[in-house]
Length: 379
Image (cartoon, rainbow, N blue to C red; front, side, top):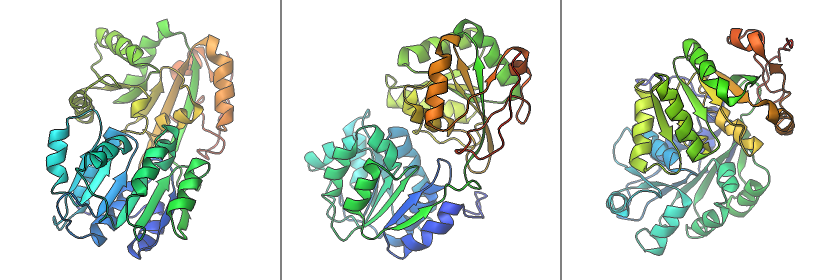
């Protein structure tokens, strides 16, 4: 970790790792980008032993295929002894390569649907699982995965240790806690000091005038992630941006796993300056130091605004989120943002064009970000 420049633990790591190493069930509340993967990954690689074929001793459940692969890669990096092996299993990819890796893996990182398939095919046996991790449990609840999660956890030994991490711990997540954790130690790392440093701005701008705005943002920020509501809309926006000379990478549900991995790789390496995505990527990707997120379309669910915006301002870095809103959507956006405690102030005209981080017009949620809100003067 020191070779990677990681020398100080984050709050959720400081709070939860000792209890995890002590064998306690842990219930951790922490925002995206706060270091949860390392928090449970260190527990897994420190406590587990090499497993028998297709009988993993560690299990991590995640909501998306991109997150599965990234968690798997992180665990492999943490396994300094190289005695364990982690592998990712998820839908949208062939069974063959995944089955070959499952046979030699001690830790399985899986999306619930594909893991259910492997269990029903008797390709994997969970009776040896010693530690089970639920990562981003609230997102799995939002995506309708809880029936599958419950069926999977019912198959692991009752003596297992359960580590649960989520941005929220209410509703369906609380039911998982009461059913599958024994006297869990609860840790809340969502204090104002640890909440990501993200500034938000809302601009009224029709879609036919937005390409110039993206060019202006690219002059300020080296790269940005741009969220659209639909798959076809993502393709259309990407084509229009590329016609203006902006190299784009695209991620959505119609893209194959190979295409999605190539898109992420192009974006990470800087070959593409814009990553155009639907909400499939709102929690499914982790890229350090993304300076800016753009909402081309408002999300259908206000919670997805938080998840999309969480792609920036990670690991202590400062982030910027820009929402481009059609004037006809003004009232609905104000209503949706109010439901997640964001007080929208509109930046328009020359005010929006002049904005830079920290200048007039950059806004923050009242409770979610805990930084002063700057008022915007309407022109």
